[in-house]
Length: 584
Image 1 (cartoon, one colour):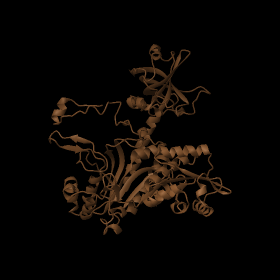
Image 2: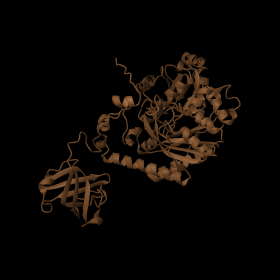
Image 3: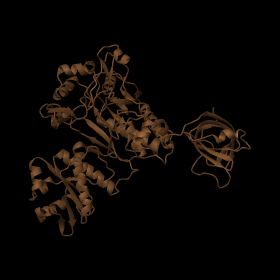
Image 4: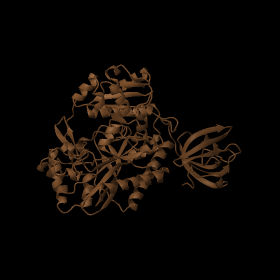
């Protein structure tokens, strides 16, 4: 229908006869001549209705915002001083001789404008209008470019793109499954895949060697800004590799994407062990764009007479501190104390470094020698205020990790346009669930223990390290991976440690264990979160900004009304009888 898009014409097209199609973005009537900015996803073109050229002028007077039209006209250069340098089409305008009104539009319930953003509920309910905004069109195009660059990288490196099934057997992977009833198998259900994990391992057993997929993953879990019920990941698996091979490939993958799509040269990818990351940053997802590293001062401060620190240490807790190298007013300190209490701390101690030593209400419990050791340990300079958290190790790290991020944000230490990726390796293979009094996989049960722990794995599961690795960008986890267990004997040992009987193992994972009997290569891989990658590259933490049709916080879609009830007839076909629970 059209000869050009609305973002294509320039001064080289002067005097051409063209046909354009699009939405009426804005309308201006200047003394009997009507100017309209015509919009499509490629840009804007100013079209002109002059009664001397366009004979059916009454129809032009009826055009309103978001009407869809097809127009024919002649390209002319704009008058001197009237060009718009912000637009590619800003040097020209099209004088219209013919128009076909394809569709009239009612007044939209939200502005199709990047400068006026509606609230989240309105944006999700009228998502088709929200997506018309030029910025959202750019986000979708950027996501497309990232996917294209990712596929290009994997294809060049000998990977085969293979689709794995969406109707699978329900297997425990850390979150709740979404389930689908089977009509032809009464009382039985499919699960929607939380990841392609088992199938990509079976592809390695099948000899595929290098697999990848832009995979849809579905998990029934509580939502937050970087989590949706359905998300997409670059999923890959490789045979006859070790962890170094995978880390090297993933680094090259990110270098390719950032260079190809954003023109960005990435720096080095530092590698931290899990223990080191927790010690220095309080989290296994460290943001390394700034310093503010944590220091464990338990051994020093417990030499003092300060009872709070001594009591917590005697109960197995730790005392760590952070030194922002800035002097804070008492009012500011109180705000940080309140912040720590809001996120679960019982309180926060502080000391100010002066020319005469340390100063605060608790310094009287610390003699000069202990003060000197403390200052030396954290290299504290005059004019600094030191913040202390004392608690169980896990909680202490959690509080300080959040305090570290808040301080960096408040002090302007975070460069928003900087991208720093890093690796965290050597995770514990198991974590202990105190509530259920049992061991659980730290990542998943198919990850290989490091060889040095194989002989004594059952003796102390808490000390077993796995051949596990995570990659983090600016404090956000982008993906987890591991070398997989390829020996069915080791796999069964891991399953027993987490409390799974042979009968349960065969019921849930029998097809994988059976496949192992016929020869499995050493293999490993990762799943890299596409939504998070795209969002962070564009400067967002909310992945909904880069997903065409996301769900809200209640896992609902206000646009189409899902989830919804189904008819009695459908329920009968599926052999289901719902038991509704009354709300109280």
